[in-house]
Every structure is written in structure tokens, then in C-alpha cells.
Figure 1 (tube, protein in one colour):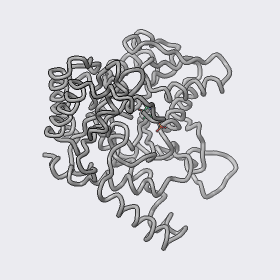
Figure 2: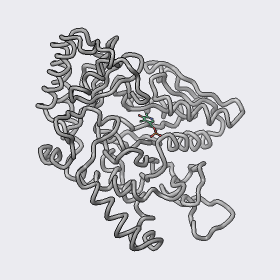
Figure 3: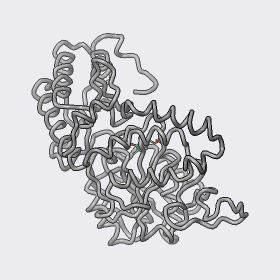
Length: 397
Ligand SMILES: *Cc1c(COP(=O)(O)O)cnc(C)c1O
């Protein structure tokens, strides 16, 4: 059984703050600082360039990939870490498009995260033939899968509403039509019990700075189904995806296996921070995380609906249809979230009117949820959001 009392003690959380934004940027594990110091002083400082071998920096992207694999139901040697999520989305889309020579449609839904859609649009513009990105409503995804669709790409948990898609059903429809599926796990990894092996998904990508707590800008990961990997062109063909990088050959030959999805030099210091966070993940079971997250989100939904009738729940009420965040729409949502933050409950806001709250059993317990409900109730009952100081928009909302 996972000990969430213990995991909570392993995070640094500023005094008096209830942090409900781990779905955007996870908090700092207490051990991260020492781990980074070690990498800087003992490895970079002392070993200099020999650290690539002595400290095994070159192996880290795959080793960390294996640790993430356990959290997303993937087998070892199917995940590697590097670059940013937007880049990995582009790579996955390019590889899938290239694999499906005669298919011209990249299909997604209008609730997908803009960066994922932009990456597809950029790819299609670059190809300059009759490829196209087709955007339909989430509920129309399945009906639009046909023999022209090269790949369907979607984010398993909607970043705005917290809705969890029926990945199984979408993947089944894609398989029947010979379309590949690219699953974005940005709001799944470390939040829900996604099982990539069971889903038989083709490609998946995700980031590590949200629920995995790797720190701002920590590297992304990519998964490729082991049955597909050796027939897939990585497209972003960098030297570290080459079968023999240190031959410095002028012709690109992809490495076999997940190695070919690597591109360039790994961010060693950022990976060190991620390793410190994954140490905490080693001590818990993702099924316990999911179970507890459902309890916390249920508690929050019930409490807020009871005490704040002016907030409209836009997250599915059925636990199996949502991820680990709860969103409410409210006309003055931006100002209300600013008031919330001033009172020590940190969530965030997504245009036009969505207040988002993320729940992470690793460092949020039911007492925190209770306090968050009380805080929100106070803001709403006293119209605290109606203060001019809360109306000014920041760059990051
Ligand atoms: C957070 C998020 C991103 C962000 O991509 P970065 O390259 O890390 O900035 C992309 N896609 C989805 C679905 C996300 O939730």
C-alpha cells in the first residue's frame, strides 16, 4: 500500500500553501536540490567530459525512460527521454505520417492542446502536398477515422476540462481502419492508470514537469510500440539516434529500438532533477494514486457544488471519465483564481472562463481539499474576486 503521508513529507511545500496546480508544474521534491548539487559538483565539476562515461550520462535518457515506462504500463526499452513535449509531438506526427505513405489526414479534436495542433499544422505546411490536419469535435473523432487517416492524435486527459477520453474505443476504431494512434499523456503520466501495453497504442508522448514533478522545463518522453519501432523513421534524425553516433558517418542509419527516437545531447542537469522525483514515484503504486485521486476529486466536486452554486462544473462527474483535475467555469474565473492564490490556494485559469484545480495524492490530502473548498466558498460568498487588483492579467495565467 502506498504511503501518501510519507510522500507528502518528501516535497517542499511553502508554508500555508495548498498547491492544486501540480497538473501544470509539480512541486519541488526535497531531494532534488542535493541530487542536482551532486551532478554539478561531483560529476560535471570533477569528471568534466568523462562524466558521459563515468557518470553514465549517455545512458540516462533510456534508464529514466524505463522508470517512466512503469508508470504508464509500458515495458522496458520502449520509452526514452529528451527534448520538449512540443518537439516530441512533432517527431511522433512526422514519423507516423512518413510511415503511412498513402494517407494524407492527421486527425485530432478541437479540445486538444494548441501546441499539439500547431505541430501538426507546421508539419503539413512543410510537406506542401495534399496532407491536411483535420480538427473535429471530441465526440466526432471516431466517426472521422477512415482509410485516409494516417494518424489520430489526441490528449488522453483534456487539459482544460479534465475529461478522460475513451482511448480504448478510439484505438480500436483506428486499428480497424489501419490508422496509427499517437496518445499525448501530458495529463495522464503520474495522474491516472494508463496502460500502454494493454491499449496497444502505437506512439505516446508526455512531459515530466506536470504530475511527474521533474521541475520547470524538464524533458519530455516518447514511447513507441515495440512492434512498430524498427519500421519507423524517426524523422528528427539526430546523431544520438544513429546506430553508431561515434562513427561520425555521413549517412544516417537509425539505431534499432527506442534509441532511434533520441535526437541530441541529453539535458543532464534536468534529468538529475527528474531522477530525484522518480525516486518518490518508486515508492507508490499508480493504482493507489488513481484510487486516492478519485476520492479527492469527488470530495472537491461535492464540496464546491454545495457551497459555490455560481460555479459550473465542466469536468465529468463519473470518475472513470475524468483525470486528476477538476475544472469549473465562472464568468469572473480569472479574478476569482487570483483571489484564491492570494488566500493560499494555488490553482490556475484557462481562457475564457475556466478555473482549474489539480489533485495529486503524493502531496495533497483530504484536509487540504477541505481547506480549499472553504477558501473558495469564502471568495464566492463575499465576492472577493470583485477587487480591481485581481483583474489585471499576468502573462502566464
Ligand atoms: C503541457 C502540454 C504541452 C506543453 O508542451 P511543451 O513543449 O512542454 O511546452 C503540450 N501538449 C499538451 C497536451 C500539454 O498538456
